[in-house]
Image 1 (cartoon, rainbow, N blue to C red):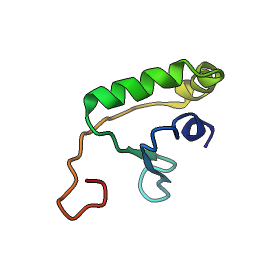
Image 2: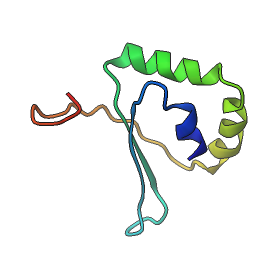
Image 3: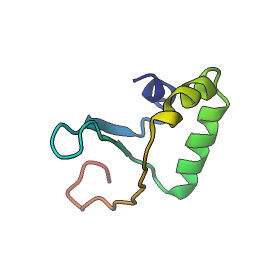
Length: 80
């Protein structure tokens, strides 16, 4: 929740979900960016904010594995 507060300026957060079936407590974050350039700019802007580094310091050790995927919204998606 704290991390999302740092990233709300560009309103790219779509959702955050925790799985309770299968491998437990897997976190799924969905972010919407116009393109890879806006993703890079948004992520770099987070590093310039006071407290972001502390947030990363405490959360990164909790990560066992991580995957990133690019998803293209359908024409009917409100994320167009």
